[in-house]
Length: 377
Image 1 (tube, rainbow, N blue to C red):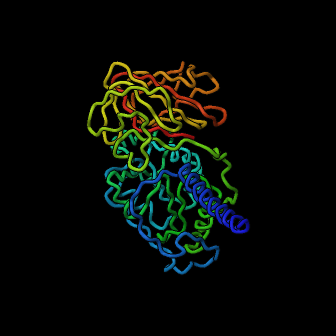
Image 2: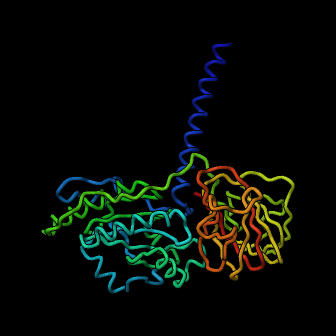
Image 3: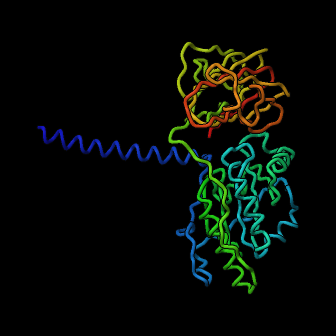
């Protein structure tokens, strides 16, 4: 009997270890890439491998990149200029959306690669595929490209036509093609920057050899510190009822009530990684908007940085952490005197602590404040 119990314990331990390991894998993926549930196209085998051979590989191994379809706008380029620019070039297609913190953290690398390799035969194309309705506005996208200093071509994929053509599901996502247009490398999310740059270098070298070009390739790699993720972090929290399926983190007993104005009251106790509302809030598909004179959001979280995607009529919100105003040690880039001015449709950094930890965030807002999501880092 004791031997049977021992065997059962061993088997149970193995099962638990497997479950924990799988869980940690999906947590790490969520921290580096935002996922949307579109059905991807099936890639051909070996489409994510890269060859170091000097001759061209067997092209049947690598799918051709789809055309850019359904494009609704152009930034830093025109349709004619972009078509001419892509001819016989190594192309990095970057899927992004401007309110995504994971995307924003990749910009320093993309900008550095553009500066380093654009005269060697690399073209970066930013494919802006929005998550929220306001991100379809070309003026908002132009504002974001100017703010972050993105000078390479950007196309607006507002209806996800090109997203679907690539079978993409992630922000950010990189697809790199050789000069003949075959996808030779893909990467989803943040990280692996050295690997991606080495692919760029080798594809540019391959292009130079095949086209008989004399290109001096600098084999050094861009040296930019990567964002460090903690082992524990609150997941992204959405305020739109259409985003809440399978990830409903509103803590009020009133819950989501689609297209209704709901009076919320704070409970006596709060659960970690859930947000709580006070005041009258409109429930929209992608957000919530405050209607009463004053409202609050209370969030017990675990993270280093706290961001919100929000908009408003140009009024300030007040921010407290653990019941105290922000200080120089934990104030975010968009906060001053424990306040943030909310006007544009964009991502706002409210809290930036020195290290990850568990805290309670309180936001006091005023009529017209509209919030889409919390994101963390």
